[in-house]
Image (tube, rainbow, N blue to C red; front, side, top):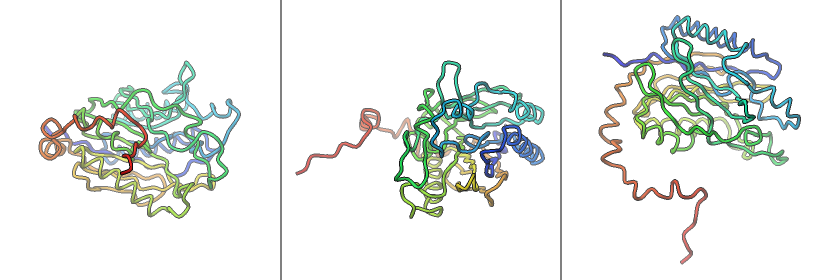
Length: 311
């Protein structure tokens, strides 16, 4: 029996500050309709898919901050997306800012199965940026101000005949992200991101260098864990701030098999054979035979680097 999934990275063009949730969801539904026409089984939307990337602003009014968050999912604005996905029998994943009933705020992504049921939730672990206004930066990146580090870990879920996992944006730069899922047999990783085209602390690091680092992270994570990686951008110029694109699908050998051509709403589609993950998992990256955990203690026993003594 084939375990091939036709998967789409549903790239989003810019979402402006004035754009309503309803307008954004209409765009997402349109991409779902396109995915149906292309016989897709799974559509992966981006990080903070319902709003502009609000952490670029320093906000002090908590009511204004909370206006960017979702208190329940689905809600009135997103229900049309859930209903259309269920109508098409397409599973979806998308990110949003989550405000929990007990007052916690997370950068969250969910997996919704073909009948519209939420079957998995992930909360972003590796929050980049800073928590207070930084006059030395060319623009702000305040995820540490508005979100708490995720508390759910890097879980995987059995869905659509495979083992699927999620991570968000900056998580892709950390090898531990992929390895924890790899140790659970992950076969396809869904990743949404909103990445500025320029480093706010290093203006010389422009889009080309940042795209190189982006691809390097995805391809290494896919190869070293023999997993498909589906990476979906929100991109283009949001309220004067450019985000780079680069949505792509990477196979278990670390090869890019499909990628975006624009910085606007666009589907990037590939047939992902989940059985193609087996060879790597049974040979070079057969963890059970080759890993030597007695030498890996530093990875979980310390955070910052500890330098060796001077001779």
